[in-house]
Length: 361
Image (cartoon, rainbow, N blue to C red; front, side):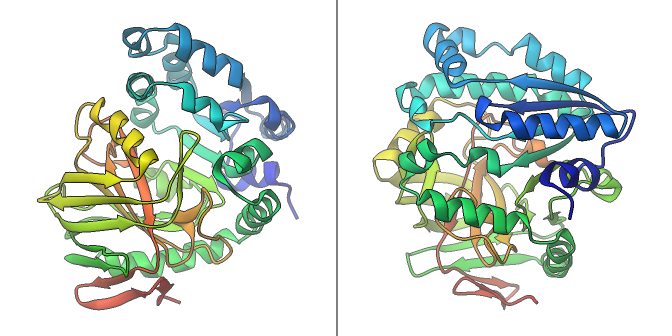
């Protein structure tokens, strides 16, 4: 059986001799970063290790002003213009550092990052995120996870064969791709109608192949497993009540409610962490309030309540804000997605998910 690094390089992004690969990582994921680089070299590609640290992030968020943070990094833009493939290995070792950063600075930094990495989309750069790089004990503590259970789940979900996810994804995409309307309901109060007519579903199976590139599906992850549709920008009406705990910036959002009218987010309520997220939303520009995505998970080994909720088989997630990096029309540096528990989904009146159970084989 191939190692994680071998699978990521050979099968997921299919690295070639003409590739320039950037591997973004933190110190705790150094070993995996080196393994990825070795596999890239075996494939004849060029590879660069790009190190971030918790202290580095904290320093630039502390010492740079909001206006300075809003300026795109020349280094990030340069890598975006040179890379043909990228690997992303997690995030800070301890997400508690995010709690010390004002929401307006987060919004400014996100705006700059979005602009700096825009060439990646234009140049069709392939990208793979490896969630095992996020699995740290400080992150588990910050979000109230059982570390051992989380680690086991991520490894089990990562081992699900891509062909299984592709097969389920194709059947689900076949239904959504010919649909006009999606209706989502759930016991927590969700009652949302989405217009998906003429929208092409995107299958996320952990692989970026030539077919994906042609369809502009350039991003993948391990673990993977979902089908996403970008609804009509004016085609979302109703309420979605999120009741699956969602980690964000060192905090845990446990209750959040969005109300949509004609595709726009008109009401944004929730608990304390949701209010903090709302501050970042308010500080952002562009199409922050537009419906962005509708996702159904397909991974049978993923579990709700961790960072991987959207890929859980039968899980239903709704996103708002920017979606141009997945081929959508919404231009905004703000984007957020969360998951609804035990949702029922009807596609043109026919059930596809019932109380969190995916009805597609």
